[in-house]
Image (cartoon, rainbow, N blue to C red):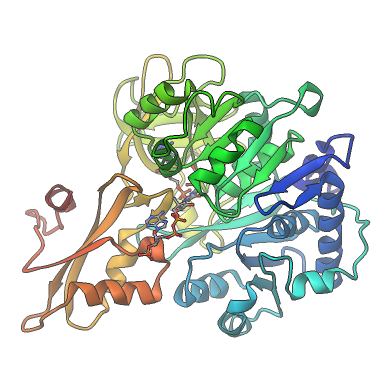
Length: 507
Ligand code: MCA
Ligand code: AMP
């Protein structure tokens, strides 16, 4: 028999404070949502989704700007037992076409201004329903749900039932949909509740500044589940703006960000010990936090950033301790219940201090890639460990340091950019013989892409036009910040492009 208690929403709901009229979310536009509003809003949306008669396991694909109603749609999807599929708002039609074709969602929700092209792609993919949801509380979704009841019994789910599909790009081939279950997300949320010392409403509660986008693991799960499962209020910022964060710091206790957010906050003269005096915890992740940022933050605010490490496929894996030494340059210790090992090329476990591939196992590890059983099998060892593609070492005290990646990936401002995707796009442009995209250090985004392109004989290529062609088709953060047209690419004796040389040359 399925148990209602395995539904993540049921657990989040249980953690709502006794006073349902207290504020759950305050937005930077000055709107207030109580816990009751959250519960009623998600009930109405869940009832509306269920009234559509969707099949078991139906996917609800959502590409909308950040809003509290978008958060409610996520919670309503969980509550009604369907599968949520968040999509980055920067994705353009070629990207969305692939995701919708691959996931075959029953419902697509988009901004009204994108309805024309998104609905064309959705109907082509066999989607039955396309609704709109704008960040000003308008759109057909809310109009339709307004007629639904605000009473709703959370749909029963088993712990290994699918809750979310998150697409991650691949080092080769197309993007893969990581399938996360109710158990994956609940187990991780409960572990982090203990590890990060969240204060219950009875202990005065925490207040989280939510400044991240809500279509990736960091903003959608780590931050939102963290606040909800602790009954903590959120200060909800539509977009990250360091000045707005500074204004809210005195009223908050927890902040989560990618390293770019910390670097941008440090550029604000108003960031000092006094501004951060009410804060309990600053958490960083999604990309490496420079030691310099870690130390400067300590000096300026008196707070030691807690760095943690995770992936879309695994949610959170390691964390520096809340109580205990937070070591800059490390991502801390494995979370309780997570088995983590560093191995050599034959999957033999290495001694502490030795550098190798990071593999993990635990209740947080995803159920596989959507409709890609072979790809899934390739990414797991025979004894069930997931190969993260990250390279690291563990010191004698168990702290993990990530030293690199075996996957060809650039992390730019916390977003993943896959060189293989860009190279294949550039190689298809007229006059291009071949290309290589490499990541180079960048003061703001940590790392950014540089494209190095070789023309076909007799063709004159224009670097600006190449970048413009990429910008017209791909999410803007993926577009390399520079493009160089060169005579040839450096290759080793095996004929493989030596990306390390290009990285050094263009750094
Ligand atoms: C924006 N731009 C970027 C990026 N963001 N370029 C490279 N990398 C980026 N990340 C470019 C745009 O293309 C545009 O260029 C120009 O900057 C301005 O765009 P805008 O959107 O206004 O930028 P912004 O608002 O300043 O955004 C920067 C940002 C944002 C706030 C750092 O990128 C961001 O929210 N990053 C967080 C990503 C995140 O949540 N990651 C978590 C993934 P042009 O004008 O030329 O078009 S989850 C994860 O990684 C795992 C599981 C984990 O461990 O958490
Ligand atoms: P994603 O595909 O968006 O889930 O990105 C996951 C990747 O982000 C991981 O495999 C790591 O390479 C990287 N990552 C996440 N957190 C950290 C961190 N604290 N330090 C270094 N890399 C990180």
